[in-house]
Length: 158
Image (cartoon, rainbow, N blue to C red; front, top):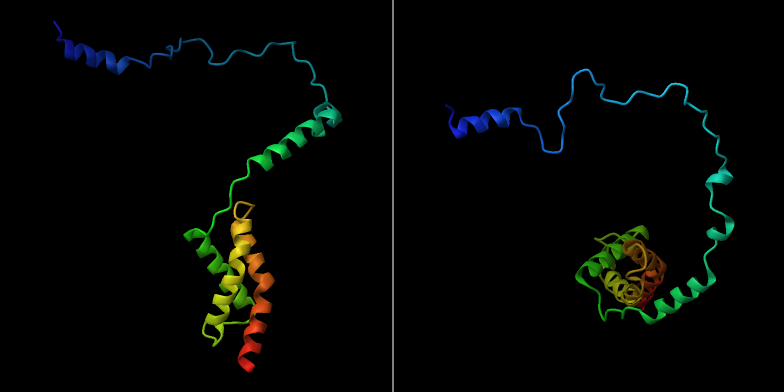
């Protein structure tokens, strides 16, 4: 007489998962290929694969409605930059100044940095959410860096 516990152990050792059926000996795992039913495949051309030209063109009515929805659902711009965006702008300003030959140890670096950061800040608010923020901020900083450096140098000559 077996106890209930030992009987369960024996069953557990031979038991399979509920959805799997035990494999029967002498039966192949795959179904055999049908002999004589092999037909050569049709060679498909690119024209057969591609969509018709009328499906490739966007519908005019849809484009107009998408533009109308985009105008009505505009998200208001933030009043100021978030901490992350300020950090990204700082990095972009430092890189722009260094590309123009202004090292961090230079006399005018801090002044130029503050001025360029102030100049780029309003433009940064416009580009948030439009593609790669870091790349857009770098473009803005590069566009204004020469003017800021020249302005500070002229201001200090007087």
